[in-house]
Image 1 (tube, rainbow, N blue to C red):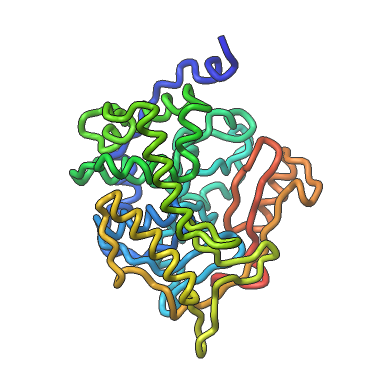
Image 2 (tube, helix red, strand yellow):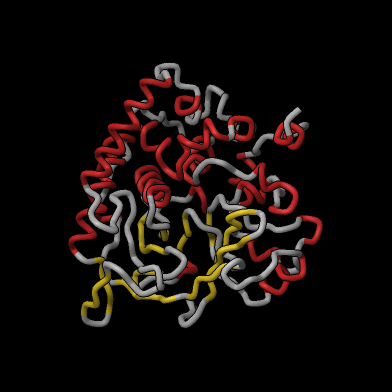
Length: 338
């Protein structure tokens, strides 16, 4: 028996969508404000929630820079595709954030308004890193919303849903873990909209390869130097803002970057059937926040129970374990949300 099979032995639990909706009723509430990660997963989440619940996209956050409608508070938004370590902020993410469940920090309830699949299963980096959630936030959201609203995912959407976060690579690289998580998400049930995505009988491996090749070509047509067509770049490697212009007392996405990412959103919209409503997306009138991003490896910090507890004393805003020995994180400095 392989190591991954040993780790998965007895892992037959399934998600309780009713409990999630009961504990986090805001996840199915209409006309909410949200902040997105500016990549394909975040954009799909925004498009999806806007289409079915009329959510309004009020900002973007990439770990170094945040753009937020100057007339809106972060407390009045849901952060999609990221976990915010603040009690009074709502968020939905899928990254590994817990280090050791046997040494749970005293302030772990800072995630009480965060919906997170790894946390729902009490998975941590120390004991369960190889079992971490292998899909994207959009798949998780589809499962949750699909438990309350009837809708069908068209076959054309599979291209976009397999592209995001490299899902198409993960399916064949970690099949045991993916299958276990699909069972957890109850994706095999007839009532689940995920069934048509992951148990679609139309696609052979060859036909799926052709579909993905076509998607990549469309993405590449809108890509430019240093600007992949499937993401909105709002910061440089050094943390300085990118594609952002000051306009009077506020900031906006510059026209070229806006038009480019709108083209990608419209590609996603055409494949999924989730309508792109321009009035629901904010591209200007932003307040700009600059934060500090770091990682344990870059600071020569060895990840263990002690250093993780010390790390939380710095009050990080967001973070993710990128492997069993490293955490990438964001600290509210020089700016603060409140």
